[in-house]
Image (cartoon, rainbow, N blue to C red; front, side, top):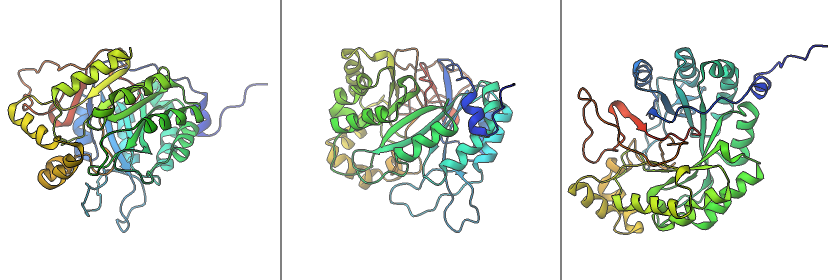
Length: 361
């Protein structure tokens, strides 16, 4: 008797084969949360991967479907708004068929409806060769020790149920201000235990950590890679966040090298490239405690604005499965050059190029 054909989207996804790893070189557009930005990304031949934030609209917005939007900045009372819902976003991305997707979930109510829609389109995504990364801050972290919006007991089972072949990007929620200076060994052990509890294959997981919050705990943070074999790690700085000193980047490289895990670590960071940028970074990072207050009192929208860290620890997409550190791609003569303190991997219109893309995110 012939095998019975799977009848539900989740069964079809479970019966599918995992997609091959994407190419090592990807050009990302981040926070693609409007129709205009999505259309720009879809017609730009340089863009190979799209990251977007997902959440439910504010109460009274007249809609009950997930939208592409980022939560308000810390301290802001302005409700999120968007002209793009998730179903439309997914339809257009699948129709175009040549961009990988990273979906950054910001609340629990949006998760299952989006995963159901994603499962229905999974056969098309697979035929297109489009990889998908499912991202959430699943554990509390520095200055954000309360409940997370997407606890692992909700996020992980639903992701595995509807989209078992999607890659997972797991992070710690961090707060923009507060007394905590760094991640702790307990944070790392909690994440490692989470992976064991849910039997997550290391090769399907990338961990994301703030480089600033890692400065005084580099060895502890990098050790997550020894606790979870084959996993990978991304160090990030948020949109609008003041650039970090080059010395910090070098120290991170050295910490990874000393543990023999350099090929499993990527960087999507803003690095100081001018005297002014250095002075700004020093003023903010004089101490971790005062940097949180300085960021709030003196930087305002620059460091905690619409594209800043906010309350959920905004991060960028992953770098490199093929090893090595990031590099600055040559800038074509027709492309405006980045200003000195922008990300050295920045491109116009929010696109970012990674020389070694960890295709897990």
